[in-house]
Length: 491
Image (spheres, rainbow, N blue to C red):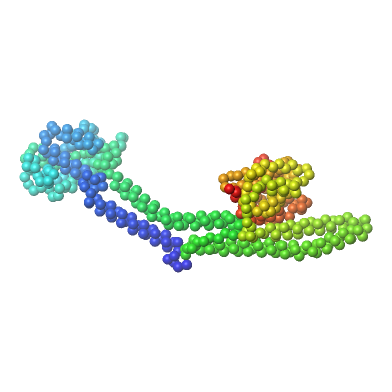
């Protein structure tokens, strides 16, 4: 795999391209501010609003008599939802809402340097000075809104936010302007947009997040979707379905992982088939000598004296056990059906259950059925009958005397579940995941004396998988054991 084709390189490249895209968006956003009108919430920052308000107040206060100052400040306070107070250099409140100033606010106001010396001119809509409100003689301050000294303080008990700004006010024209302090107080940290306006930054953050999410979704889906397919494939492999093939035409690590899973599934399928083929060949080769030995034991038993007949019977019993083992090995090897050669079709379950019970019912075992006559599943009738027969045989053998055995079938969405329950002791929980492996026997409940060799449930698994289904086992509460066959429902 070439370095530029790796998943790491793609993610890194995607990350840097995302940064470039966000930088372009930010540049476009800030460039847009200069194209918008001054009334737009995105034009200018909140830091410029207080100097603008100070500029307007400086002009109005200079043009009005001091008796009107309270009215002017109240009007501005109501408009901007901020309490405005006009302070003299000595800390006296000249106009505005009556309040007790915290000591730290008084100290900061007294420590501020002097601001601009003249109030700004009033300009009409056309930008020309009004003659009736012309500025006092002398050169105007540089720029339309001169930068005045300012400070900000946060006080507690109660928590309040204060911002102060020097403004020049003409008290007795044409005398010199008095440098006063315009003090703004708010219970909100943003001052309702006067001190700090978070709206543009919130909009920028939302836009950047949305763009990033939209930008990363294709890459993330390109990673998670094949991983999900691989997870499904590995789950099928864990259930013994080795006919899994992933079609991942990618050159990165995910593509290599898909090809590795395909190779693993093919190798496991070869190993399992080779194992069953080997067992079948061994069982086939053992069948003939075992038959000859059994024949010889029968002749020997007739000719041996009474004293040695028990020993011959013991040998015959051992040979019978060996013969049963060979027969189960042959059945297990023959159960390895190539799924490609099996054509499951809609199959009624009730007739198969009746046929199995006619062959497997044992004296003393109570078997109850609850299968709808019209319930059908996609399966091969012979393979399904062989699997169900092994399950019923095990239930009769290990729990036939413990209570009734129930065979029930039901449909759940697109599946048909055929379940066999018994009232026996069950198996250890740790053994449940290994029950369908060849030659596995939970020693606590099954041994040689019962005749089990651990191939019955392995045959069940092979037959059910050939029908494109799955089989599972679980213990019941407070006691009992259940084996469930899941098949695709027939529409």
